[in-house]
Structures are given as structure tokens and as C-alpha cells.
Image (cartoon, rainbow, N blue to C red; front, side, top):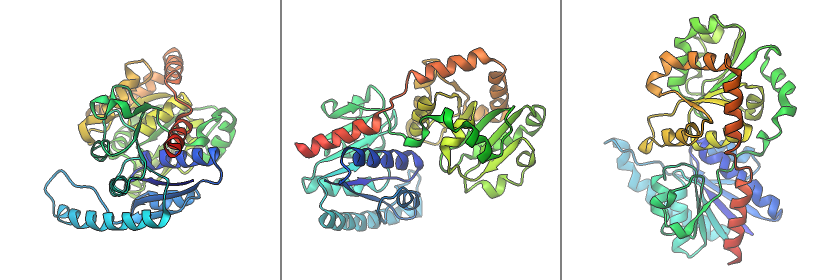
Length: 364
């Protein structure tokens, strides 16, 4: 069995793709898998680290604002379609899987024109532009949220949830290792703040603006993932120098960060929301307003409406975010309720379910 998995751009696309690849290997260890990503993007680093080969396309997104970069888009698209055809002819896949992101468009377009079975996985409660275009061409669409028939043909939809990395299960056994890894104290509550794989400026600024408040609560300690592009700027701040704050550019050991955390503050990307349900952590979500159709707020509200998480608006983060987490930590009953309710929303077998849908396509 030969499978191409295409897409990427952010961890929200890459890690589900890798989880699907591992699930396929579990079902059929002889399965050959090739990833196709966008040159210069995160997948070109993370996929080889996970043990899978990857090819890169010279492709990027089309910017909604008028910009000179858009002049290159048609050229990049033509070049990427040509290379996608060469990749498919050489690898000869039985099925092609798109997980969203720039690279999935050209690969799935060519695959469908060559009558190769294909499937897409939409992580968000709001469908991305690429996946909406591809929906008519593919045979199956795996989604994480209900009511997605407003974007996709109903007869193609399968609700599977979002695949998450294997290593975030069994976190209780990793607690001591997590404390040692981050240099944390054993008798303090731990707050994990991260802005997705690339970091989030507003979350970083909100923490920096709350230095005095953090100083007043030395009983709490912080794991602060700043993002590699923001690290040099924020690591020099007074906040980052506090004894109870542990700054990092990127979280290589996400499972240990979750294990150490009592409360998580983060954006509301689809992968993050799915992981929070699996690890069952009390969470304060600060949805990014800079995404299509404000879909992170929709992702967050899927939890908030079930009393499974708290929400702080991005515009209010500097004034209220840190105080909100301290108020939550002071209310153990509320903390416990959030943990119980978020655990009810988990879909543990999403990667396996998607892998089985891929197998069905091949057998057909």
C-alpha cells in the first residue's frame, strides 16, 4: 500500500498528518508513506524528524490584501502542479490524503485528475478555502465537528475527530519527568502558556504586561512558550527573568508540558482544542482574531458551551488573562468541573478511524 499525505504550514496540520501516518503503519506495517509539503515551511523539518520522507513544493498562500507577493502566486501554482504530477507518477500512490495547508491543493488536484482515490481531513469547525475547493473532487471528508454539511457534500462526511500525537496519553506517569525536564518546583501549581507551534504575540504581550501580578503570586510557576520568532524579543523582558517563569522558544516535549500543567492558556486552533480534550486539562482559551471567519472562536465555543473551558477575548487579554487564571486556580471546584467536562469531549481514536477510512478507499 502506497499513500501520499499532503499539507502542512503549521503544527495544526502537521501533527495530525503524522498521527494518521503512524495509524496507517499500525494497521499495515508494510505501508509506504510519502509526505508532500511546502518548501520552507515547518513540515520540512518536523516530518523527517518523525521518520517519514517528504517532498517540497514551491507554493504559498494567496494573500487577501493586495500585495506584490500575489503576483508570484500563479507562477508558483503552475510549477507546483507540474511537480505534483511528477511526484505522483514516480511514487504511484494508491490513495492521496490532504490535511489542509498550501501543498494539499496541487497534490489533490492532480490526484483527482488522474482518478486516484483521495480523502481530505478538515480540522476546524470552519472549512478552509483549499478544502472547500477540493471537496467536490475527493471521495471522503473526515471532520472533527458536527454540522459541516454547510461546507461539504453530506454523503462524503465522516465525523472522526482530530488526530493527535500518540505521546500525549498516559500523562500521569510522566509528571516527575516533566518537573525535572523544565526545572519546576514540586509544590507549586504550574501554568502552561503557549501560542501554537509558531507562538502568539498577544499572549506574550499579555504576560509581559502582567509582570507585577505574576510577582505577587510566587506560589504559581509558568512554562512560557514564546515561539521562535518572538523569543529574542520577549526573553529579555523582566517577566522572563522572574524565578517562577520558565521561557522557551518552542516546546519539543509537548507531552511533558501538558503533564506538568495544572492550567493551560492557549489559542483555540483545532489541534490544540482536540489535545486539551485528550489530556483533560482546565483551560483558558484566547482565540486568535486573525483567522478566516473567526473560526478559532467557533472552536473555543464548542468547549465553552459545554462548560468545558473558559474564554478570554484577544482584545481583553492584556487586562484580564492573567487574573482569570489566578481566579481559576483559587477555585478548585471550578477547576475539577472543567477537567471532567472537557474529558467528555475527547475522541481518542481519530487517527485510527481516519486510517480505516483510507483503507476502505483502497479496497474499493
